[in-house]
Amino acid sequence: MSIKIEENASLKNLNSFAVEACCRYLVRLKKPEQLKEILADPRFEKLPRLILGGGSNILFRQDFPGFVIQVKNRGIQLLYEDDVHYFVQAAAGENWHAFVQHSLKQGWAGLENLSCIPGTVGAAPIQNIGAYGVELEERFHALNAIDLTTGEAITFDRDACQFSYRDSLFKKNRDHYLVTDVTFKLPKNPKWKLDYAGIHEMLDDTKPVSARAISDVVCQLRQKKLPDPTLIGNAGSFFKNPLVSDDRFQMLKADFPDMPAWPQSDDLIKLSAAWLIEQCGWKGKRYRDAGVSENHALVLVNHGNASGDEIWHLAEAIIHSVKEKYEIILQPEPLIL
Ligand SMILES: Cc1cc2nc3c(=O)[nH]c(=O)nc-3n(C[C@H](O)[C@H](O)[C@H](O)COP(=O)(O)OP(=O)(O)OC[C@H]3O[C@@H](n4cnc5c(N)ncnc54)[C@H](O)[C@@H]3O)c2cc1C
Image 1 (cartoon, rainbow, N blue to C red):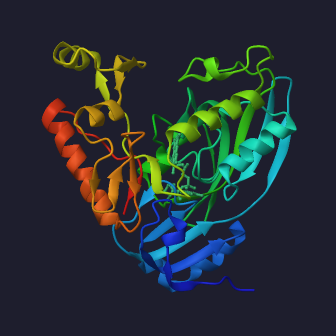
Image 2: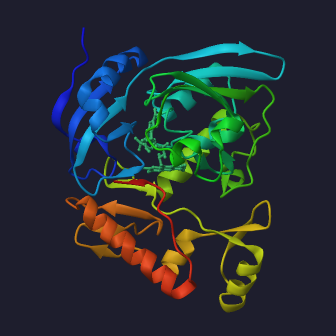
Image 3: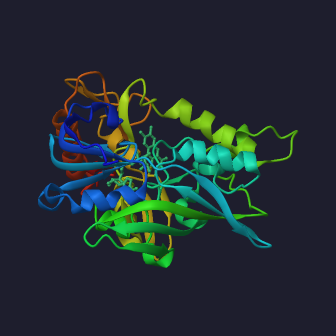
């Protein structure tokens, strides 16, 4: 049976900002094999394309004039195990948080700090998702993808993905490779990461630490801090934390002694984008229905009927004022279209 191609489809329910936007064609890919048919479609070759997961890291400023392929394949399996690791493969269309919870139920630890991140498994490597002291690359083994220009299947190991802070080969070569599944390397004797943003304090110290307990605490912490996109549209952190050299940081520190910072490798210092935005007075501010969350200055929200352009207008005003005060140019984290 041939794959259904929807014309002029609304994307409002397919992006977590819940902004109104249409695409020329939408296909929901349940099996990677269906891609052959799409690649052979003459309309596909000519038009721009977008691979979509859960739409939780995208801002549509306007209608999308091409093909949207929403990845919906399912399946999770233990591929093999050795003395030290479980190698677990999940289809790209699996919901990320549901996959983490499934892994915990099977006794496969390692992803607990990444609980409650919206979106799909296939999108997780694109920006090397990270939270509460863990980045995806630390648990990543390999992924399978299809090159949309040739239709060829390719396997990428960890080095080939070129992971870095909220970045990867795939983010740099957008919509070139469609990820079909990801394999994780989960440790049999995990070392808990508890020293980040209150996890330790919230754990029940009368009980042994477990992956389950960490996951529950991470979800509680996130629910307190981050607006729920099913209630108020948002894409989580709208800006990346800026990375500066140590020299540059020392100059900033002389003028702004309270500026928070986290040393990274290679003489790089990570600054807090939320702090910079808050210092510029943006927390809780609003432009029409676009706003800055009252709880978290890094999160831009849709109070109801904001357009993608209005949200972007607010983002630009924030970028401008942070640049004026600190000479730092904030980079958006979501894909802006
Ligand atoms: C409330 C909230 C909290 C968040 N917290 C965090 C956090 O703590 N840490 C974090 O890192 N992120 C966070 N995010 C951002 C987001 O959840 C992640 O980036 C997530 O991985 C996006 O998944 P998605 O399926 O929704 O991707 P989409 O938004 O659909 O797509 C994101 C990018 O990935 C590409 N893509 C999607 N699927 C595929 C595929 N199968 N093959 C190739 N390319 C693909 C898209 O083309 C696009 O470029 C948060 C978002 C929200 C709304």
